[in-house]
Length: 478
Ligand code: MN
Image (cartoon, rainbow, N blue to C red; front, side):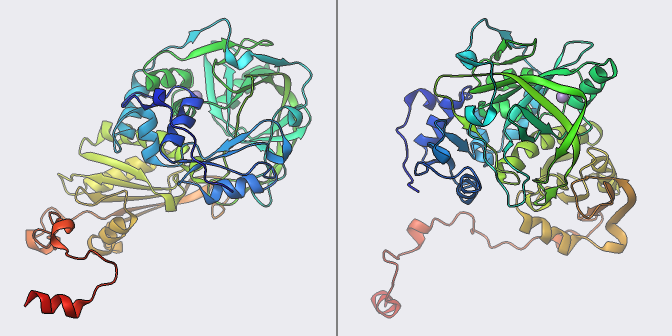
């Protein structure tokens, strides 16, 4: 594999401007040395995922002619929090704040008549021929489309929902889909109860901010594409599908138009999921694709199941939602973080400025109610960096006593993908690692060497070579 860095595009370099196009984002990544280009011909079975995962969080990877398919694959587009800040055009550390404000002030989309996403139309659908669909993890049941925005309309209100579902290729024009108990399933159940299929579209090859907005935790009739508009700072251009009334991002690389079939279920899975285990094989819903449209020379995006891109896409919008949820009741909560060791879903760290004794325990109870996936909450004081797991562990080691500061709740609802749960029945644990308010100040005073932070090593250290002759240096100084 080569590490070629593509030419920098000046167009994408306007500082502080959100990225609105996938191709601008690839230019941006390339211009910052964050895009690797693989040697042509990497195999769609495992090899694409293996290379992408090795570079996960360091570089995105572009794969020309994977398994000799004419369409290239890209992976790892937003596998770093700092990159998300760049895509938003905000300083690192402002990602949650920016996402929160976008979710609170959505911008309605703008429908256009013609779109790049519909430059080429295929009504005779053989998905494998049209797009390079990789197989990712060892025991995955086959090729999966993993980075498709599944867009559907509420059969009663017409308001759209946007989310990502794992999609297994089961026949040339059919996909098995896992619908968790959220909005797509609610719309489908309305359609199926009326004896209808649910019209949907799947958009693949999307700009990073629209991808992120698809993971926003909103109410049933809030359209995630309006959050994308707010993140872009301008209405998202959408185009109506050719075979149904679903509206899709106009600049998608691929659009698959189809239906979730009423009264049809087929076996789907196993599939490597975010907890780093396989989601099980079971009978699931089925999508039939009626038409595929795409850009000229399209690019196919894949997310490696369980990789950083998968984990962070879910984490950022959840953190924003959980922070807003907690701050409504607890104004002294400063920040939250879904730790990577907790698969960016199960373990929540909360930073707060405690004002009353007992407040941290209320925060634990509030956080556990914030999302059923949350299994463990650690509350720390404002001097603890919640993005550093060593800091959080230190706070637990020195400020927490299990008989006094631990909360355990049995038999609550948890994540079905947590293999230690009993089919989603899970215990919850909260750790109050805050300092007691009545503690004598010196007891919890963190040691610090005066001046350590201000040392300038370029002037303080006189060491111009890696190997130093310390005897000569001492003699010189005499
Ligand atoms: Mn929704």
